[in-house]
Length: 460
Image (cartoon, rainbow, N blue to C red):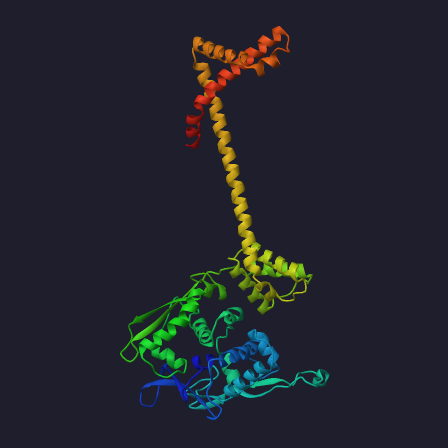
């Protein structure tokens, strides 16, 4: 099923993928092989190309919406553009039609395959991916003539749908998919997303991987060079880490070893060793409730799967902080109150702006805490200084204390400014006030001599 799960873009006439069926043998006692062969029915149309993977991804997106139950997909070319983030137009529509032609030309041939659990194996079965398609130009076309369903459609073969129903299905993250630069990188992302699921490590021979891609043979050095540029992009995005190791058999000695990265766990809803990155019963639900509250929508009802994925993406871009994610929603809705989908919040750098606001608030909060700590430290020093000053003052001999007070009083009487104030007082009161000021100045001298060492004591 790996071949069907990842329709290859190829430059050869056919591609063959084989797997040994455990516990089953043929008439000669040899292990039974399950074989899928991908060929092209009409050589004049040509093989699929790398860009066709985008169209196939959009079609698979529509199939996931119906859980692979609808054989006929009523979608037009504008819907495909919407899923892929393309701008609708004549050239884009032509590209979609040509890709559908090539995808219609893809033929799957299975040998010793089982289409349904509990049924026997087909010794041989053959079918296509797309059976037919029809698109309508909107010029001069009245939509009301459609009645209930649009005329545009893509019909998938019943055998492919049945195979899809029996497979483990998980749609890739479209926002991450659209962020990748080239179709080859997108294909590698889809392939790794499937094969790294619930695995701490995935290994595959370089030549085997190249056959899975439907590419012709090449020297190992060239395969590594081509893969390195694709793997580097995904590694920079923290989707996986990779390395090349030489440990395989002679016919395929070099292996690509992948380990899931942080973003892989985010997109899969986990953080390391199977733990969830966000508790969806708390974080995602809380964001959904907040979104509905801001939009004035009813709070009851299940969360749409696409909205849930958007909320998970929002949490991943805001480091799992629900408060920051809510700020991003506020920024988006304050800017565009008419936004109907949480996907709008992921655009225009709203998560990054919210994260920056949060970081700025944290910096201000840290600065305030630092200032408060400094004020507490200074108060502690002042208290210790006052206590030590009192102790030193009381420890002085009477003669020393009298001498310091006398020196302070002499300095006050020599100060014209102080005496100008005191000369306005009654003589008795003037002498009392001068004595009080002299004692205060004398204590301040003791306090000043202690300040530096008391400060050191306060730091300790």
